[in-house]
Length: 616
Image 1 (cartoon, one colour):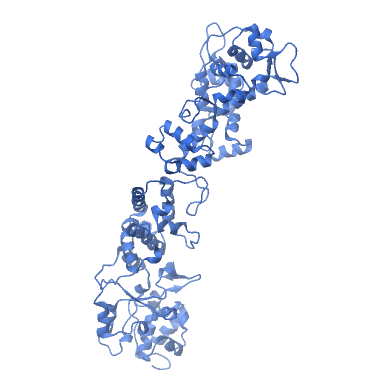
Image 2 (image 1 turned 90 degrees about the horizontal axis):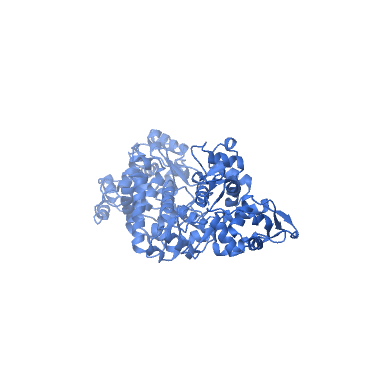
């Protein structure tokens, strides 16, 4: 060794690391260890270990070595415990850390009987990579040595593997043959610039390897497996199993998740839980301490959970908040929609959404399509039992029966409500519309004028049916209609019995078009256009009445129209929001009126065009 250059020269060997080469230079020129040698050469150890160009080039200049060859095998330290090799960035967890891995057969070949074996044995770059656990040349597991963290920073084989010759060969003898895993081959090939599966190549190398190992670990060792308890060969096996799925991209990963789900369903006789279905794969991706983006595996698992498991509305799920569920348990749905879970289950059974067998299970164990369940729950909330209408409308039972016979209130189709302990019901929206019409057609008074009486009294005096009286009141056939300010509903209405007595009975259920337009909240001009056929046929179906000039609207036609269309004002009632908010919601979902409002003279929407969140 001279003061200027190191002599004799010791070329940098293919596949080795800068620290390995420096340790071999130390063994050759001083017979000692790495650190004192670097101090003598004025090469800072930590700078060299961090792959900094100044330290690399200083050592290369002393040893007459092309620095580009060395830098190609240099793992360069970045900020925040991040590293880079040949354009691939990764964290410290992708390296072996303070553990030194080696293949005793490789070291024995390196020595080949040399007088200074430590000047010949090389620390391979691949031994520093965590996913590399098997020697590609000798196809046997790598061994590990660790004395302390400080030694680990140098990975100095002279200190950690003092065995030489026969003793070194003896270390290799008990190791069983084992081919490298496809994941290991992929990692090494990627650092050499080789192309792999597109989905894995589209991720950082650490993400690709971690995803493959974590998925494979759950598949191979079950959902009870814990990362901290797994040995290196367990991880190697996990990589082999996981590769069969991640190498096929998202479809392969989804297939693996389907297998985990099927296994969990076979083991579970009740509610599926995410941790017992996906094991530590879910624990990893759901961790609040997740410091690194795990990549697209998290999105795929989130989609799988949404498609197959109970998710509550607005619940955070794998890094996303405000989730819109696709599947939900009956119990969760009932809680979020504020309805009784047993009643909801009965209605769902009656509608054929769930089977008789499922109906026998607890609500927390039965999954349904979220939007379907939400629609049913909304129907339940809108349903007003006919038995409650006298109280809601402040009316007698005969009055309620007359309203329904006349088509002023249309019953909801049974749809399972009978099993939900509501044998017959009407839509709350229609009830609200009827109450609103009372306020429009009746003049408020503090006390009843002498000539005015209640609806029931007028029917008694005139000997007319209540159905005819109500039809005349809401159809505008009575000149004088008043309402008591201190009494709501039908019982507060006042009419002139002389006018009622002059009414002519009508022999068919339903109402005039004028009354129908009023009950639907549509102006007369717009209503006439709806029945005129100018929009490609009658939007509101009417029938002709012999001897009468005006057309007639049957209760069935009213129910059909209400099931297909809704006015803006009625939608405000249904959505339970204010006008600006509703306009924003409709605009956000690009909902357009069913007909040009300027042509129709009213704003009317098709229910089929409404988003599920508005179609209530």
